[in-house]
Amino acid sequence: MVRKPVVTTISKGGYLQGNVSGRLPSMGDQEAPGQEKVVLKKKITLLRGVSIIIGTVIGSGIFISPKGILQNTGSVGMSLVFWSACGVLSLFGALSYAELGTSIKKSGGHYTYILEVFGPLLAFVRVWVELLIIRPGATAVISLAFGRYILEPFFIQCEIPELAIKLVTAVGITVVMVLNSMSVSWSARIQIFLTFCKLTAILIIIVPGVIQLIKGHTQHFEDAFSGRDANLMGLPLAFYYGMYAYAGWFYLNFITEEVENPEKNIPLAICISMAIITVGYVLTNVAYFTTISAEELLLSNAVAVTFSERLLGNFSLAVPIFVALSCFGSMNGGVFAVSRLFYVASREGHLPEILSMIHVHKHTPLPAVIVLHPLTMIMLFSGDLYSLLNFLSFARWLFMGLAVAGLIYLRYKRPDMHRPFKVPLFIPALFSFTCLFMVVLSLYSDPFSTGVGFLITLTGVPAYYLFIVWDKKPKWFRQLSERITRTLQIILEVVPEDSKEL
Image (cartoon, rainbow, N blue to C red):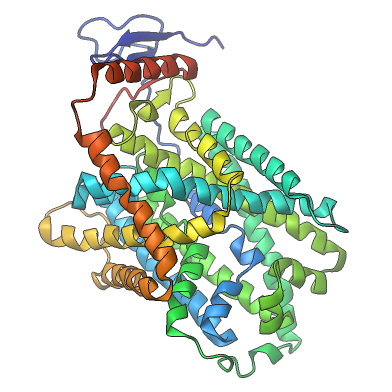
């Protein structure tokens, strides 16, 4: 098959525009025969939507170290209650996002909803923190887990060298970026495969756990609520651990414009996914406690590995591979979805113009995908990633609570807005109140991390006025910016989207 040449013209802004066609467009043409619009296509079916949510939510946490909730709740019973409560709360948030996603049919998730309700300043601050810190840091953390567990079968008798972990991690990150740059369809297909791997891994833990229960191994559930009393100041940390484990239910809203029949498929995908995830998480934790005591769980750095070594014998060697595949699925789903957030923010004028451009043949937001690569590599080879993410946990849930509070605001401000999917008002009210309450409580329980995170987030305010509001930039700066953009367009073979219609 012969590839059609890319015909480019110069737009008013000085950027290259193009179409996949064999001839230059003539005056008055709407769309020439054989011409293909350069747009992001609707390739996300219901199955792909479910796989994106499940494949992104289920990462390394449930397999490696679910002890954060146990540490901060004080007992087996309370930890299981918290796992269930975080699942229900995540479902409430997801249902609220389903209403927002079917009412505001734009990609971008949190950013788009905050922009719609609270205006450009808060929306810019949200995407500023996401681009510079949260997303590169989160991708590096989950990728490090991938690197560690893909190497574990080769280093059974000794410690894995840190440099080896980081090099394999760097390769994994690069593969994910290339995959998402090359094809939307292949990214989605691989995500479906990885989702089945994750569910298989969970079943490998749940089924032996159920067998243990049938055999009567219930000693760790006796007096389940006895133990160290939960500290009120520890509840925000337990909340962050729990909600972090469920994080990812919002990613389908980042790609709303690419979902087939979004009014039906977004709510369905969210409900199916969250039901599977919540039941899976709770049963996995129950399975752990059939074999491992609370004290042993707190001492274990990889609970799934400890559990499998006791019950599965030689088959336990397969568990690290499944954990690595699970992490790879989270990496792939996260990059796929968040790149659309940067794409939309660029389209709104809040990020450089190049990030809103699409590859002329592959129809992927190539620049918005690869912009994460250097930032993630810097995070990977820098200092303590986990502390950095702790600083910004409050920012993530603050803006998520604000986005859902915006749903309540829109109910009163725009009552006639078309809402194909509508949730009872108590659902967004409870979710936004819980998020904002935990954010406030974290100021008391961990004032240093929250304060540092708050200061990092505030850097977005002067950045907004410097880069967005200030329109009298020097002529040399504007010319240099346009020259860089045109050069990148030629190198990457990207052009602005042909159609702005949603």
